[in-house]
Length: 490
Ligand code: ZN
Image: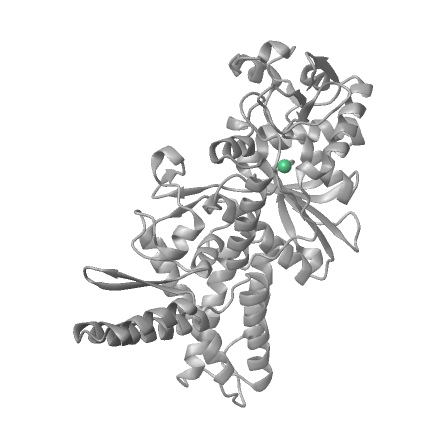
């Protein structure tokens, strides 16, 4: 199976047979979140995409060292070389330490990813913990003559790079056009060329995240952290570099320039990019009011949502599209996914209870090969899921005595179905959770009814004692004009 895996490489713009540089270990680096806000759909897609790839490579028998960074410094507003640091801005607005912002949103990112059943990477390095490694690369690039100092800041010399190496190999952008189309922003007079990018920025007096360097007290440019951390943990060249399509330019393009000069080569053999998410056909944007946080999906608390959608519904919805296609979120589509997912989960329970026959009317081996074929073709999950629904049809037919499987075929179907649904797609059963939630809801309704009756009868001792006992269990009861509301305090 390993030998048949084909992946689309953004670098060559075509599908290539996957061959790991080190057959015993795949190195995979994925650009992680900039931790300054609540995790949203834009975080869920790359995490789930590379979780799928991570899971599948491991399933094929590779050992994978999966590095996904946390950006906690140097990512300026508008992804530019000028403006305030995204994390420092949040810290200023909330009057807390930048590292409190980074910690808080790293935690909430982990919390949301755990719910989505995204496996933690092997290493999760932080940009702020690798300032020395980043300064080393700045020195190497300066020594090689591909960077220059300007007013305490260091910029990468893109024009010189383009003369000796080809600039734009990943994004296909041409330097001349890029220069012609770049607006001159404030502070760009520090740059020799508008296409140059910052490796080190001198900190302005109000800039709070700052480190001492030979050039100035300042901070690293945003693109540098990934060159530094991927090199530290995966070496000069590794197998897969991943991220969202929005990072292709200028972030990944700049990483290639940096690594080429500092480490002598394009760092990754395969560049893999997931496509973007739209909501009701529109690009997500804070100003458009369609920016939905993951917690809002799980709770159904955003005005665009008709109801809550469970983490597995969101995960399955994302996996129903190929990672290189766009995904459009709508209530209608999510509800269709919910119904499909529930059929899939019911079938997995039915499967455990099926009885074998002495003959088979279905070809399980063929179905199994088709599933591997789909995944081996650039992780084609929509085709895989179509085959899983074919398996659902077989399961339900066997249950209704309209189809038959031998003991061997039945065991094979169990193994294949569970492997693809739970291990590779990373789905998990949610029914237990919602079942116990239903019981809690029912019990609370019963208790609050008893309390309401006690209040009606002016039996304050009983009604107060119910409220106090609930408080001891961290359940808050609030009386409203329509009765009482309850909530669990975390
Ligand atoms: Zn990155």
